[in-house]
Image 1 (cartoon, rainbow, N blue to C red):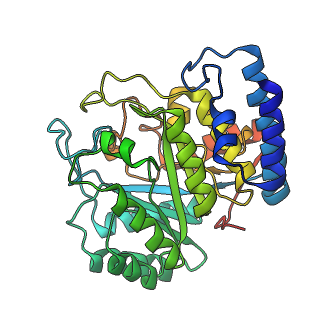
Image 2 (tube, one colour):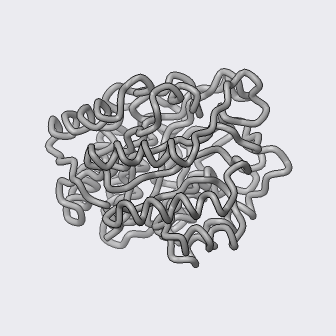
Amino acid sequence: MSNEKFSLIDKLAEQHSLSRAEWTTLLGGDEASLFERAGKLQPEEEEVLQYAAAKARKVATSVYGSDVYIRGIVEFSNTCNKNCYYCGLRAGNSKLQRYRLTVEDILECCEDGYKYGFRTFVLQSGEDPYYTTEMICDLVKRLKQDYPDCAVTLSLGEKSYEEYKAYREAGADRYLLRHETANEEHYGKLHPENMSWKNRMRCLRDLKSLGYQTGCGVMIGSPNQTVECLVDDMMFMQEFEPEMIGLGPFLPHSDTPFKEEPKGSYEMTLFLISLCRLMLPHALIPATTALGTIKPDGREQGILAGANVIMPNLSPVQVRDKYMLYDNKICTGDTSSECRDCIERRMELIGYNVVISRGDYK
């Protein structure tokens, strides 16, 4: 089976696509997959992962060199009107102390970030109706006016076409919206009935049509996820061709219905980063904070698997431990400058350079 997987990795590197049957073989096959046996790799499985990572590094280097792009995240509200079963910010979590940053607070975070060399600001929140379309547009316009050499990325969840259009016209460059799963049945097991997989997909199509650099992504090892679900994800991304792909392991939160569920597979997350790089060579792929939470050197290993983006936190230190999508999130106590310096040192140790750049999709 390993030889067949090596051949499929080679084909993906050359042709950037696989059939459904080929994806199924690569991600699972007849043997128990590493997805189902997290942390218990056989030697031949380790060889497959290392082979894919080496190929992915070569492809990433051919497009982006040894550059790693940093994005400064401002998590400006942990209030959310959605009740996703996996998320610590869910509306039903009565134990969470909620907060909202003012527009001036957000601008101050970005001012500090600019001094530290950040040239992309990622404004992220729960789905909080307090922030009107007018407020978000005004914020984006002010950022683009104050920092014309910077990109603004929004991650505000599901919105209408008109709202996305208004943000885009105000100057927003990118939008992150993880689809979480491309399998509609699986989506229904992760979300309450008043949330719709079809609407999530509509949002992603709208974002693409409006000219955003669009990011989707998958939560690896989420409850009830199967190899078939992951095949659906790869087929969807192969067709959708997102400019950004967020891949992170599922990590449980103690105040959600999934609190007793096991963590997602670190190994499968790295493998999928490599495969996404081979499938979409120009994609912007972050080594996520979740990877660094599950393993101390997880972000470094993500870069070595083919990722090329790191997203340190610019939020005020006093609110960081309140933006907990999952338990034990790292870097909640570091200042923005400490985060920046730490990331730079970590990347240098593995032979990569943190660059002061917007880091656009090439």
